[in-house]
Length: 272
Image 1: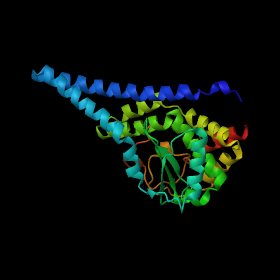
Image 2: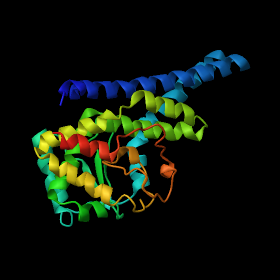
Image 3: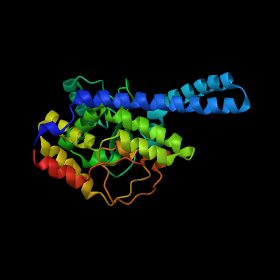
Image 4: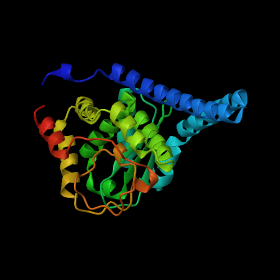
């Protein structure tokens, strides 16, 4: 496999952080321009500029600060128990020690489908959320591979960018700018980030069959309902063509997010 086709982790992290900063600055500027034009129309230019600066700063700050919490509120669930979910804690702790990462918070939601995701913003240790189905269906090897994948996406900045874009998409969708949200997402995300995380996970665990097995478990349960769980761009694996209880992502749009198919991911891993 040609390693040059993959973006180095350091470059990917810096690029994703820049995307967040650039989008935030563009949003702030757009709000300032809008209120400046309104100020011109009503003959209160300086007041319009001042209001625009204040409103823009408030929107940018609220999107960034509230992004992670919004997703957790949508998903629900409870904090994982070190007694009932000892395997999950052990796996996460082990990978964090090896990778030098802070341990994310751990939550479990009641759903039969094997869901695993992580959400975070820059500077946050993040939160890993798994379903009860994931806990029961995945063995230790599969759990370690999936968590390694999630941590790789966290380190690359892909999770922070995706979390931010989902919050931004929600805001733009509410004011009728869903097409703009799709454009922003399409221009700033790269579906290869999932494949890069798969390879990084195999490098961390040194056992590609573990990740292949986890993906195959997801494939085997693709026809199950997903119990209204949103935030799917953050999921470890989302089956294509699965039967969903809802299509609105529980208020958090997945508009424009592209992900490689499970078959493509499995085929790539089998080449390693």
